[in-house]
Image (cartoon, rainbow, N blue to C red):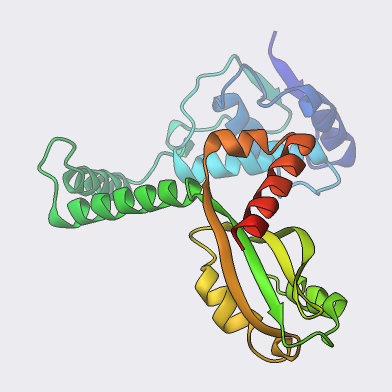
Length: 262
């Protein structure tokens, strides 16, 4: 039995159509058809946004008419006062536009050579990507080093607490200060012996000493810095350092080693 709608120019007619389209995308079936065109042609003007479902359906049919037309046959619909819709009223894309679109698609296909030789630009881009990936991999694998450093004051009157605060106040990406202790040198003078861990690609110990630890204002307390021990941290040692007790033992051992070497 054909679906029937009446007085689509009235609020009552639009309300019935809106209720009908609440659970449907099209007037009949699961694709746009001549039934949709019949109802669309029977509407005297675009529906008010108040009729949400009708507006959704109307805008969709409008878009189809502009883009591809509607070719489905439908199963029949009755709209009171509407004349049968002629075949030529079923919109299809203009021939010129269709040809132009086909020509554009053909041009696009010509531009894409799936089996052709690689161009110089493509080779260069591939090499750059490979270099970037290689550099990225190296950065991720950047090693770390453990350093034991002696920081010497000017004299026995230097405030060693402030000296250590000034040293630890130096912050750089890839630099981590560790355990420290004061070691007697003689004549009442003590030096600060401190551990630090550095990321090799980010921190240079020489630069750290020359440009950060022995310049103003830190050189008010620091007379010089010496590297006592410098060791690469292998992956095994890095894993061992995850255990806090073992880490403290290794740090203490390195500090004693540095002290005995003096």
